[in-house]
Image 1 (cartoon, one colour):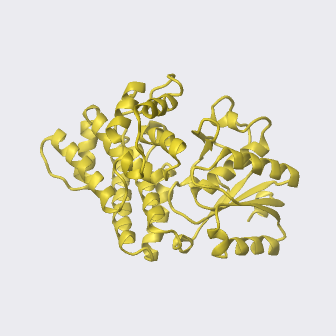
Image 2 (cartoon, one colour):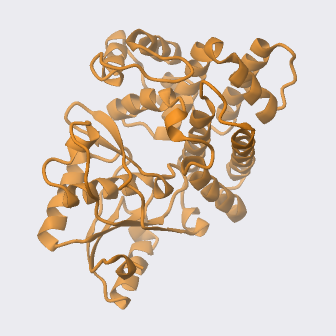
Image 3 (cartoon, helix red, strand yellow):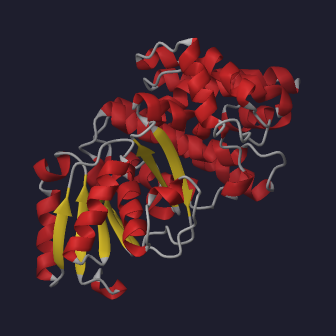
Length: 366
């Protein structure tokens, strides 16, 4: 398949030891050799993938004449592989693209063998990288950032432990929620597809919380990961995404799992902005949790309570201190400054959040 996209030498990128211990990396490399594709390997990707590893991959890729990136792992490995691919195809510092100083004009082809259903990076154009200098976590979305192929086998996700699986399921649910919360609905069909996707995620997340070996639920969650982040549930640019922006700074500073960080922040964000989007919150409560209250405001807040209860049910934190983090006022100020890009932007669509709003949400969430 790599040859079909013009690849002659691949950089096989992977994370920790699980790809090695499971034998998956050996199988992938053997398959490349059988196909006559030369390769070099680079492991060591961590959650919230680091810019230093990306730069290491760029240097290795240039030295070895790599022309294809193959990510073997989850979303963090794929995000790192995409960043390396941008760095190899463009001159200058790759961080310029993530800090929005420049726009990429090319990207080496990227493929993936996926081992975790969560971020949906395999079917989106997004990549998120953390710069250890200042611990800044920044995302890049580009038309060049789509994979050439993604091999999806739910059996490869069976080795994922409970916390990682539940965090991934939460991330999938949040991708759908971010798209749902727009100033105006994107249409009945999009809303109904989103409700169906979220119901499926919730049902199979509960099944996996009971039995991690449930392969059917693994498969359903894997497909939901794609559908939640490939545009089927609405235009990404119209969604709110404030929870993601707030969480990026939290995980950038404290290195928490992305899904867990989202669960810890979402209830506080929702209650903070609910009065600006009461009808949307009420619609979610009625259609997702079957809450029947005639008053929109009461229904909306009951829906937020139900989502918070779901996060608790599957072992996710719903406050930042449940992540083992005790936020000081000074840290909250720093998080908000970073999230506002040094006082230069607001975030969110349901309610435009300025830096003071960001501080208030972090305070309520701690």
